[in-house]
Length: 131
Ligand SMILES: [Zn+2]
Ligand SMILES: [Zn+2]
Image (cartoon, rainbow, N blue to C red; front, side):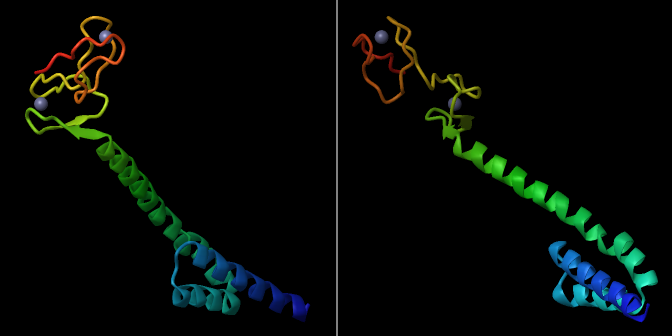
């Protein structure tokens, strides 16, 4: 009986310590929770489950924020500057929505999509429309 009643709070304390650490608690805060659990299991374990584990809820939106930033960064990479009005436009836009500049002209003869830098259509050698 004596061994078990000692072992359970210690095991619970170890679990609380590890759990608190994985949830982003500082070592000091995790050790406080663990020490409290070992000393007063009945009080500190439920308290930790209610208050201590709330930390996880706080870190989740932060992770989501990081992901949104990543997505925004990729969007920024895919933008090009309109040579006409210097607005940021999406790379796959064919026409600048701000000034109507043709960002990706098409060959008038065969309809091949041309890059702005191209002077002639690589398909049929028609000279590309220059604006
Ligand atoms: Zn433009
Ligand atoms: Zn062509």
